[in-house]
Length: 349
View 1 (tube, rainbow, N blue to C red):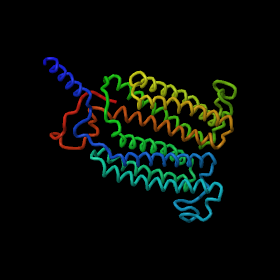
View 2: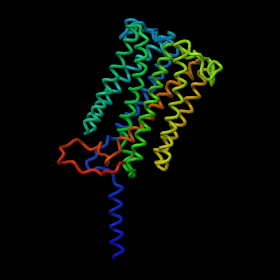
View 3: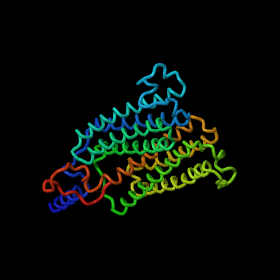
């Protein structure tokens, strides 16, 4: 009899320590999670098309905005080289705008947490700003606006990935507790990795729009040296892109090691670590192919979109590192303090 009492106490204690879901927790419906990832996928196609516009150097193939040759949809545009990519890019952007409106409505109707609702509004404002920056690039014939347009597109993509990851949280509601020091290390590593990638994307955007992709025509050496003569802006920005890639790789390996050491047995976390290493290896390969094949359209454009995928995966990791804490308190519905349930204090991932 005494043994049964002890077993009962142990079972009760285990339940208390492993349950990290706040009673007031509220997750998004599965349909919204699926829709969110559809928006992410569609946006990745838009980034690919936009990258192809830059690769082909047809950003000014349609010289007016918001119309195209004075028309919403000019006849025969699909058969006009350059115009098909630029006008197609605009049409795809309009489709993304409509999808984001739907996402915004879904966030507002499906979530109780005000901060998650407002993420949808921020995404809607962001897609509007992105369209305006694209228009200014045309009307002002400005490389500066073109660079802002490209960099902001990557930030917008990361925001959509964050929203999708948050909306998908209902498929990962069971967690094991971890020490605060381990979780802090993961947060620092994930933020550093995201910052390194985004910095690299900015350098890459400047390099591409200043047509410096072949300023250093060999790889892995640079003009036959480790450090080339930095005698022009093109060479400097190109070499900066290569040098900063080493920082990105180091940050990626750091975050992967942190995951493998502390959460290697968790399939979802291990998958993120494997994905980071594989995507970074693919990114280096695509960069090399871009040089070796004299900026051939396919490897050059895939280099851009794969960079977006690396950025998106780093955002998924940040969401997991910061969101699933204090018994999912960040998912608790907004309510007066006296009605809120106490959350567990252990951090969970």
